[in-house]
Image: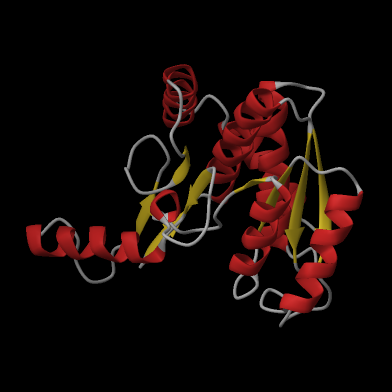
Length: 212
């Protein structure tokens, strides 16, 4: 079994987005999700924390696509949510979606809005879509890493592997074609997360997201 920490990943996503907004001269993000579920709340709150760590004036707005549980894949509803984001003046969009994700990134590309993946670690090399950020929590990467540990004898049946930002290479946001300054800033954030600098904040976010 493998797990990751949504708050750690969300913080790096928000921080990377903040750096891209600085570069582009923007200040607002639309987070397109489904229906305000607990894990969405954790992702959104930690994203906002990371975003504001770059600039406290930056804002993120949650835009839902509709009703649980199919609307992570509902392209029509996601498109409507994207249009709402554009009308609200969004400079970046985080399509925190399943089957509807790629169509929204395509729309973001057409609108010239910063776009990011939601899980895929291969987004920066996507042959069809132009991603500015890869927000990595890729199940395939986790399986590959665990299988390697099984081969090495460091992971046995019944173990649980928690993938940690700044410790394991798999999770966390990366900026595609980052400048040296952007990469240095992201490296510092990864190191802070690994050192437990934000552990109390992440605990509070989890409490707020799942507490009621």
